[in-house]
Length: 114
Length: 113
Image 1 (cartoon, chains in turn purple, cyan):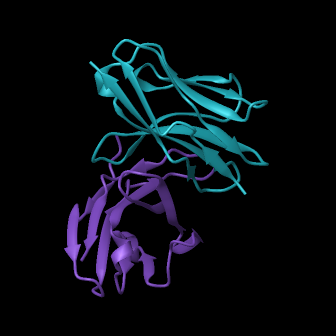
Image 2 (cartoon, chains in turn brown, blue):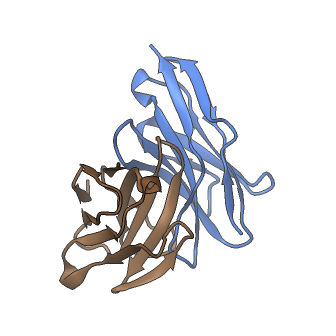
């Protein structure tokens, strides 16, 4: 089936440093998402993105977070600066359209902030 | 405000047993309801969804779910589980006029061979 690729799969970073998580969504999809999961628990919505703009973001999407997808390349989540509580698995997802279209998830990027 | 409640954090059954994973939601408008499965160390994968029509929807690998408006529920069922069904199952609500998904906390299913 359709694949969402995430790079890197794992990253360890010092607190205060910047990290960029990369997502290659399904090729014809138009909506992109980031979710945060800690210890295999609830999938916490961070942000969704359409037509070059953030559509909605949650309270977890702090000022240190930003997303972009320049010129149809990777959809990225940047955290600058990182904090210890940012340690989690970050999942990228994409969908074709609105209103309940199926989400396709990547395998996740495990971020450890030390 | 929309909420999704999965009352059981963990469910353990034997291979061949039937199982029902519970999901209740609270939302005032028109919604899609769906279930996703997450095997350990992987992303979520779509199982099935409901919007209208027959309240019982069929998904992959023998899973089905039944929508009940009166109970605000969308429970997932399987008649005979296999050890490979061991995973975390997430129920999700998506408003029909909006593109976002709100997930429950997940139910971890363990199937003992």
